[in-house]
Image (tube, rainbow, N blue to C red; front, side, top):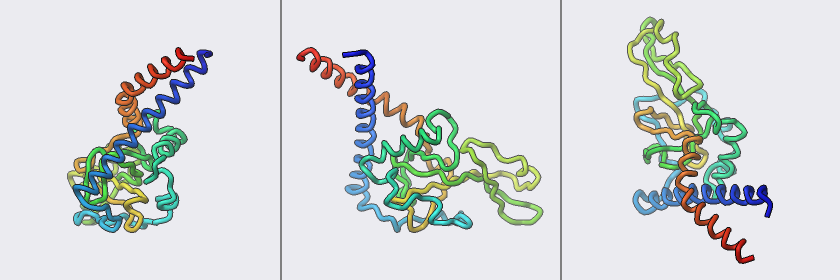
Length: 219
């Protein structure tokens, strides 16, 4: 067998191992929802009382077709999420930008946010007070790690709180994105998730490779 063919087979085994690991974590989350929290309902989504819904939310522009979106709620979702990330280049950068797919690092059941599930980061903004006009102001940023815009100093109002909105057509189709803070929800980037899954899948990949070599030896 040529070296190129061997490398290709190893790559396929690595991809299968990582995908299996991600799917098992997804299944564990679903079982946890069913046996500990009861069935998941799409109509339980709510927005925190201290925050208003997003202005001008259009249910048709934040999704690719509800349950028809292959990036969410399907057995093969992991592959479609990776394909989407590759097309956007989000696996090559550390920054998490708006419209990127992220992984929930913890759970907030009241918001239909569940660990290891994927969501679209639809918006990131800082909320504070415009002292001159005595009203709440929201300043949008494109990067999850972006600092408060300079204009905030001119508006005054003291502390500015960062909020982000997360959306999944599987959980939030009826009500739109939910709004959380960084303190409430730990965001895991796809690049970080892929690295983690690859490392955890290495033992399984090793034994698959050993089995493959034994199979070649038997030929």
